[in-house]
Image (cartoon, rainbow, N blue to C red; front, side):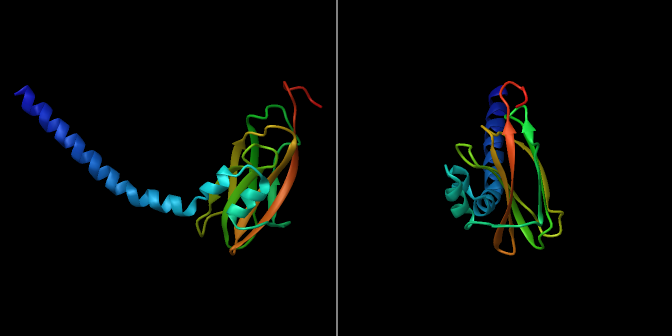
Length: 153
C-alpha cells in the first residue's frame, strides 16, 4: 500500500510541475521581450544607451533624487519621478559602475511614473535617470559622492 501511494505522489508531483512550467512559459517570453537584457550586460554608458535605444536628451521634466554624499556606496537611495507624458520605462544608470545599468522599471499606462530603489555606487560619479516616453529617451543626472568608511569628505 505504501508503494502505491508513493508512486501516485511522484506522478502527481511530476504532472503538477509540467503544468506549472507550461503556464509560466508565456510570462517568461513576455518578460524577455520587454526587459533589455543586453543593456544590463553593457560595460560602458554608451553601450547601455545603445541597447536602450539611443543617447537620451536632457530633460527638466525628470526629478532625480539621490544624496549629495553617500556614506555607504552599497545602498544608495535613488528615486525618480517623471513628468513626461506617456512614460513607458524608467532606468537608473551609475556612470562608473562596471555595468552602468543598475535598474529598469516598466511603467504601465495609467500608473504614476515614480520609482524608488537602493543601488550600489562603486565610486563618486553621476547617477543618471533615463526615462522612455513617447518612444524617445530623456535623462537627468546628479553627482553622488561616495565616502570610504562612512567619513565625510
